[in-house]
Length: 384
Image 1: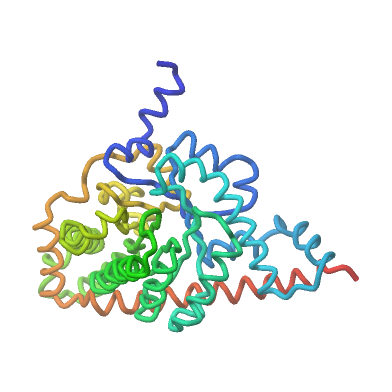
Image 2: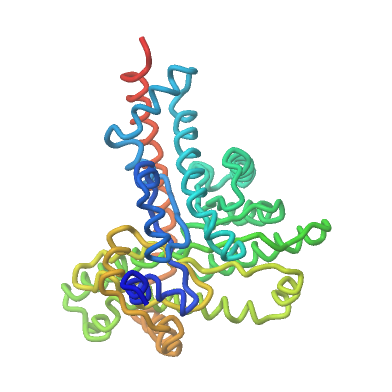
């Protein structure tokens, strides 16, 4: 065995595959794809996919001058407003990343190798508008390994069902609660059933449910700390829940997934060639410096899951991640954590509802800032 292959075998990111988990990268940028960095992660770290969102594009396109030459070129050829220019640039970035990941898509038999592009966050409560934009982006990108990202609102669930029935790959995002996740998994299966009822194949369609992690602990821990500061009589019990609720929430979601995929309804779809919608752990960068910087990767490793990892956490896990089948460890303990959180009045349901609204608001704000940045660039870069 040569030295380079031994390095690859001992890389914790590569070892995730032994436990059935696919590492994806929560990042996209034109230079990162063009200079070969994305391909290096595929070749050396076993990277299996890429996710984007409005905030990521806002940083990539809206800040700095990396895209200025391309913007000048587009404006020399045509008149374009900020929305049109954003779509041109985003679609080009997604297509380039999809091309790099296409060999992964083929080698995995269409399980991995996906790049996600999000519909406008302004459409989160508009199922008809969401579906129209999903169809538009699906045609514009024109890559079999594209995933259309749709927020997991009540209305988004309706769009997910129809998009799956249409044959699109879908990443359902901004899921925080078990109840919201259950509806999304149902929408995926209902979409496959509708597709089969039309006499269309259900094989080759992929979906992930993006279940957010660290934001839950950030909010719950803040509530715990406020009560500790107020000398709450339940101080010891509260202290024991710090940094545990988000992981427990995710582990219970995975238990629900296991139950559903062993059930009669899913087995009928699997017999037709359908592949299960996988849970994707999102927001897995550690926000509390008191915790390990790889906590939300180490603790959620299990079969048929994805973890989309921000670049700093990706590098940290490569360096000192611990690979073990942690996702199914101590499920009774996870249930106890959630029960205890409820007993102590930590209101996980209220927190997850708030986080959904805040997540949508943050993406809308990023979208506004991005469009404003592009409008400013149009004014300064267009030919005079």
